[in-house]
Length: 531
Image (spheres, rainbow, N blue to C red):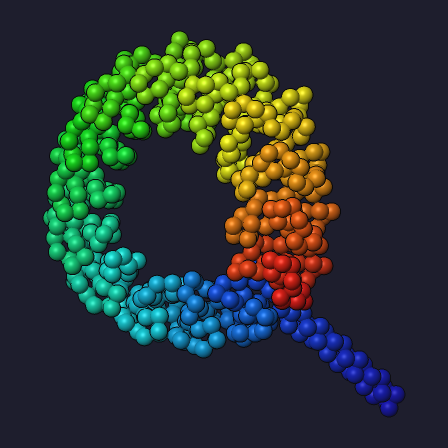
């Protein structure tokens, strides 16, 4: 019997040790600190035991991990927290400003803060004071010191102190501009000011959003224009009115198009088959299938005689966004100036959209060249391939053109002079200090704005120099990440498996599965000990 008791006792002890080991392992795993990836207002998130807290720039715990979520706005004195399923606010030292009690709360960027409890909305101040208990069906964003609110199916206006400016009166209120609201009543629309006084009674079928103090109105299926004072700028008589661009809006009447100005004056009777926006004082118009141009008085400056031209991506080439417009005549592309003079003969099979520098690619007999918006041919069509110097999706545009010869890329300036010989597989402008990324094989390097080699091709990747990253470029070398400066010098040795963007002068890095933060000189400011 004693033998069995002894065996049983040993089994219990072993089982207890096993359970203890398992519990210890589980506890150790849950106690790991998981680090956030960027600082905001001098603090960064970390997670431990399934809860969130905050660390300061020295890696010390500023806010203990007590919350299901912590959200920071640009305000340095307020952080929204979630505890259980309720929202509240704390300060940067962790002191509770508003006890978590709301089903929802705005992040706290603006004062007052919208809060929700039991599907009702109220307001609190950024100091935690209750201004309006949650009792309204909705409260919109505040603009010009007021917001629309809804109660018992009707809308009114409330100010930032929680005082009612206008009792619930309208079926709907939407904010437009400068404290002027669009209101609706019985499916008709009008305007009120932020004091709740009527500017225009609800009589229109619709009122669009205000743009530059003007809004499109609709009445009896016709369109007009009204200003924020309620004055009718253009009587509702048009089938369509477009947005005002550069002081003019397109109008449509009886399937014909014209223009009105911002004072409602009809400068062009609706006589054209189509019209386009004014650029540099001229607008394209089409009549009888032919393209011409009018000025802002409605006078025809260039007689309709051309065809509309488009770039390969569908962008209009015929607009005078530069000193020239690209048009088609007899199936060929050419350029005209604002006087209507032909500055580039109609002998080309295509012409691209001008870049920011007024340079375009021309194509003739399957060969490519370059011309500018004065009509000057910079490089005759003799290349198999030419592209404008842009990075990515046109993010950066530089004042040179990239060409290809013998399947290698080189570059010429806006005067047609070759300053980078065709020795590279790829060239990309980085804009900052005129630097150009070049590729040879699978490796990347940097060239100066004159084509001089600054960094030999040795990196697996080189990223642009962004201001947000203190004009340091993220580079990859042998599978590791680091940074170089605009002089091509390594500032942070490529040694990290993962890096993010700089924020407040610090950057998240990860190495061998451990995370921390370094500064822009590469100095470790928060040790890499976090998950």
